[in-house]
Amino acid sequence: MLQDMSLRRFCDVYHELDKASTDRLGEIYTDDVCFRDPLHQVTGLDSLQAYFDALYANVSQCHFTFHQGLRQQEQAFVVWTMSVAHPRLAGGKSYRVEGCSRLTFAADGSDKVCDHRDYFDAGELLYEQLPILGRVIRRLKQRAAA
Image (cartoon, rainbow, N blue to C red; front, side, top):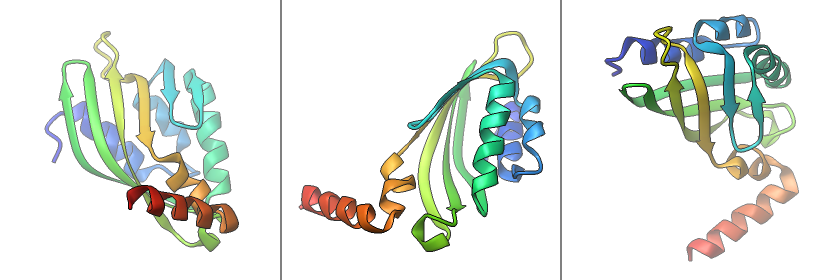
């Protein structure tokens, strides 16, 4: 699937990431990494590890499957599916969220990511999984699509 070794290593770390292995983030990120997703922005490897420690402490499952990836010089994109289960979302059942990540690899030759931006539907991840609010959002989406 992925020809670029650094991008493959990045995906491999995420594929194996869990609450016991967030210390592996240093294998793929620079010390001054900037990480953004639709809900948070974190700067620095220590802050990123703390962010992931908190995320993994609250979920009962989180797993990434990577479908496509492309790197051209320092820029890369990966398309993924996250399977996640949270005790207070979707009745505690596992659900999937599709997304992609734009990665910038450091120009220092380390082949580590210095900038990571995730793109996904925050409503699909969070709001649609809440009992009452989820029904309202799904209805609104259906009406908008009609």
